[in-house]
Length: 251
Image (tube, rainbow, N blue to C red; front, top):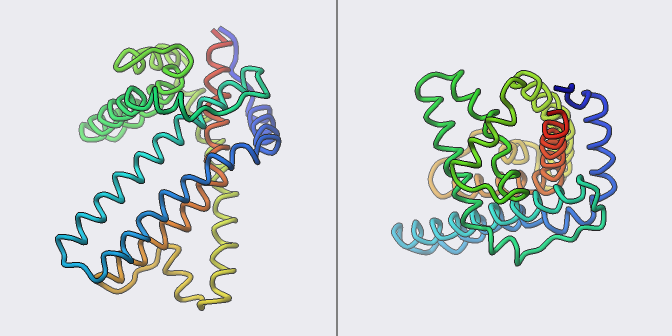
């Protein structure tokens, strides 16, 4: 069994791919911002409505936004997987995304339930499962392994190399997190120039007033988060795909 991709090579090659494909990836990832805007629009439209009508509108917005996020995640992961395999001219396919949407979502649900169950038992089992099942969606897209079999295949891939996988996920996550934090800070500074820094800081997560103002501020926070996700989520997926391919090649 060979050693996994070195940390330096992982970070460098992932960053180079991110820079090379940023434009085509952003064409997809901008949909994360669109999903965030739905909540903001729903809040504005619901303000004159009675509570029940406002709640129904917001639930519809949340479900629609979640569907957009899942579909975008699927299509983005699929095209990044193909490019990392050598097909640098691979194009994303919304049609393929629609076709594979429900099996993909089912795997995400199964993985979330498994991790949540592990966390309920104790924190460590939840952390262990989150790493062991990380690559189930990629296995589904690459090998059409579905449902619990995708989780089992991901576990088998990571088996015996959990710590090596965990460390690379953490290091790459911290690398992305630093850039995301800097961009968030920059956005807060720019927004603060126009609306004042107290309001800008509230968008970044500080407490605010009660009632509909809370929903309004939370939605603005969601938009800020959506901007950062649109920029950096492709890089997160790139690193996951590279670790996955390294696990396969090192068997």
